[in-house]
Image (tube, rainbow, N blue to C red; front, top):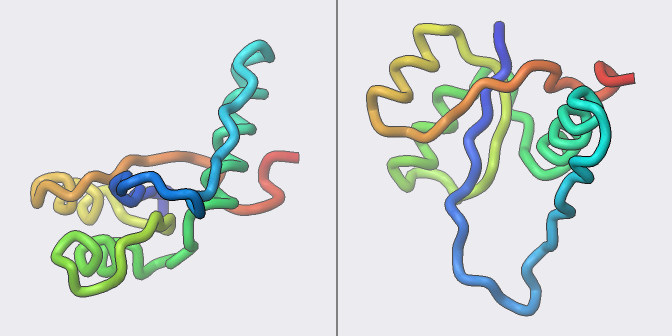
Length: 99
């Protein structure tokens, strides 16, 4: 199944906020893609095949707001988008796939 990502909405910035590095875009397109993927892997909880269920719980405030990643079928992905849940597809979402 293709990978999908749901990012938490940005909240107010506080002194304890985690800083996410901006990728160095001077390299090749693949290098930039790899950096972005590594950032997503490091900053999103992997919920695996429960992605659609967990994205809905977050959207409807039944689970804590956080960034998640996991697997979703095309039908699940389209249903989430139709419900107004902000998700996007991103390939190569497993650690070790980039090396």
